Image 1 (cartoon, rainbow over the protein chains, first blue to last red):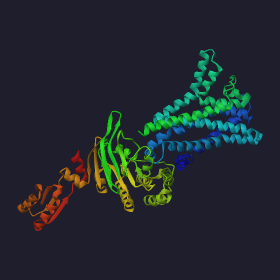
Image 2: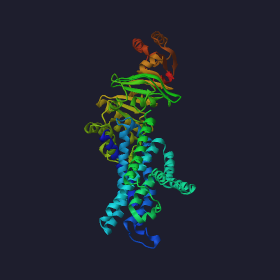
Image 3: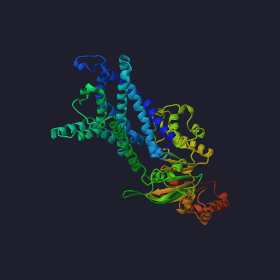
Image 4: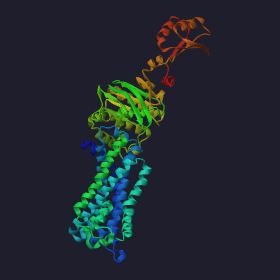
Length: 275
Length: 298
């Protein structure tokens, strides 16, 4: 694999997102929301002001759960459609680069844009917490940011698959919205429906396995495991997870959620565009 | 240099190319013409390695291109697709840097050609501020950024105004005079490319109908030259000379004697007319246009 070709594409993606102010707008939006949620997160209970870090993470988890997936899906959804619309896709295909180099460059550039905007946006609340509570808060909040970025990367990978399968922009948007709704709302509704219809008689192992089929739930659980009593804020206060659902397993499953759509995208791209 | 051998391309039940064989010679400009849907773009994409033929092969420098050879072959080719808008937020320079990067271009060599096409002030501007003509210049620059030996142009002047079209071909001519470049030029604007190409390949319904130099095709298709002589009224002697030399369909019109003649009789007719040069005051011989050849084939 030619690293210079991958870097050239990644650099272009990042430059494009920086110059279009995408990174700035998303970063500023995140910063605003995180500071507001950090400060006013306890308002329903009649208190305003910066709260404990765990409480902030619990509140921000809900924001990130909805915001990051749609952001990542829209970011990568144009991977093929935008290039096709601009007429540049054929230039890439006629260039001496492999499909793997093309996709790796795109992915790396968009991941960088996502990392910068997410880390900068969420980082502001972290800086405030560290300033108020010392560096003890740093590790926990950094882990939350890393989890959020991993969630973004998972959905970026899914967006690549959507983009490759449906290179038409309108169809990409429609499917993107459906995928977002499915993973953030419908899937969990389905699980609730399953619990109701079986009167809760679903084995813990099976239920945990079903949760791991949804990257949004994996993100929730990863944060859940780190925030103790504040888990009530993310709706998982009464759930007991089996021992096998630890950080290593959750990270491994997340990586699979990144790898599998990317591998599928690679093969579908070759089948669809190099025919 | 580059040969397409018995290439057929099917899209499901639809046959886009039907058993096409053609050769592109080193240093020549080959025009690929045909109506929309004739298979020109499919042909170009097969040459570029974007599409794989259903059957048949592409041979480059006497070597059949297999899956492993395409990457190396693509280093020798610059491709300028029809209508590319590029990235509005990037400058011309950043855009060229991207394509130089993916093509592994030598920075010094690429600057030599791109600076001829896009001046420094344009390179520094965002592509979003470019006119259509400027974008096509950028398109040509990216195709040449890796200093390729073969340049493939697909409808390069589509949507440009006459001034931009002229500018485009002037630049192309300048580049061709500066380096040995093999050009494959696809277009359906026949008058525009007629004097830019050495040979023409005419396609219809996925088949190659004819290929060769324009003059050869005129003779092969019996497309006549047009001869116009200015005379003082009817001249039986001149008519006799022309008929003797092979001219046909002689008529008088507004003080001119008009005649047609087969392309291969041109020298004989000129020679015969020079013997009788006192019998006319002006002469013109019109070669058949690419358009006439095109419609002759169709």
